[in-house]
Image (cartoon, rainbow, N blue to C red):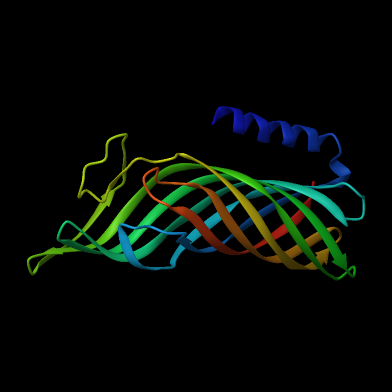
Amino acid sequence: MQKIFYAFLSLILFAGMAQAQVSIVPKAGVNFANVSDHSTFNNRNSLTGFTAGLGLNYSLSGDNFLSVQPELLYSQKGFSAEGGITGVNYEGDYKLNYLELPLLVKIGFGTESIAAYVNAGPSVGYLLDGRINGRVSAFGIGTDYEEKLEFTDNPSIGNINEIEANRIEFGLNFGGGIGFNFAENSTLFFDIRYNLGLTDYDKNQDSKNRVIALTAGVKLPL
């Protein structure tokens, strides 16, 4: 994980050598998250989470038509579900918290006052921690609970809070947005993005993250 942060720091230093073409991009919003499949849990539904972070936009063309944008994001993923394991029924939220590094290529178009863009690129994330909260019932007796996810190489059968986790997640991002210029080279923007996880977060399940993120932020020149 240290190598990832060093790479991000190198991008910052590289961008700093061309400050006239670099903008800082703070942003925040909501995630609508789910997973590709999960045989343990049936009737999965979308989980609403939080995302926020910081990017650096480096213009390659000088007119913002073509740019690259590395980001450092905190991103909440997971799903809501109902299911059962060995006679024990469960319903609730399965929450996963990631630190994520997307690297996007952006193409912009529009006018000086209103501009739109599309972007795409890979990302790498690190699973920081997770929690499950909901209700468990057996033989007509139910109880509410919340527990921290335990990452282990040997998860116990029937313990839904234990997983053999892939802490590193690779993904692809596709999206776009619209921006409104409110000062010289400064933009208020609204962004929609789809994050396609390529790595199972649980080594024992087909459990790739799927996230639609809606964010807002500002693009400010350095």
